[in-house]
Image (cartoon, rainbow, N blue to C red; front, side, top):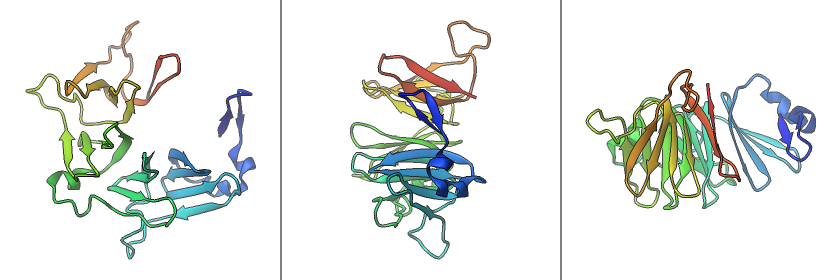
Length: 231
């Protein structure tokens, strides 16, 4: 469904765009919008809806084509500042220029041990330096520099009180000041200037702390209020 913010009502997308009926059996995991195209990441591949003409294209994994998406389970989408579409899947990361229909796998040739550990991608964001932050289910956070090719892995370290507190990273959000909010089984806050994580742990039945685990959506509104969704 799509919500009309002016009217405060939901619109049935299947009625507005009849071709979306093919998604009825798929789980929609993520969305991204760019240049009149709505990209839809599902459990059965990647779809592109032209919101003006109503046409719908589907992209799926083809084992014989190294420039197809690497996995049909699309778990995260990100439009970069360079207008590239980054696609996170259950197995790896791919990227496309949004026009060619070709999907490059930039980490497949990376001469780094960390590259092979990037899988089960849950969320992505781009920081002010153009680095891509990649949240994974089980291997913590990865910071990939497309320019230099470096990949840093941020994980839990019991000897470091300022490390990430959980390697099961579910969501990411960067606020206007550059602080990165990391949803795990609690809420980690990363200050890039200090290169430290601070944990806001969950405390059941509390009146002024997180009362649930599994932090998924994080959003800062125009009034400076941080909204945090949990499972």
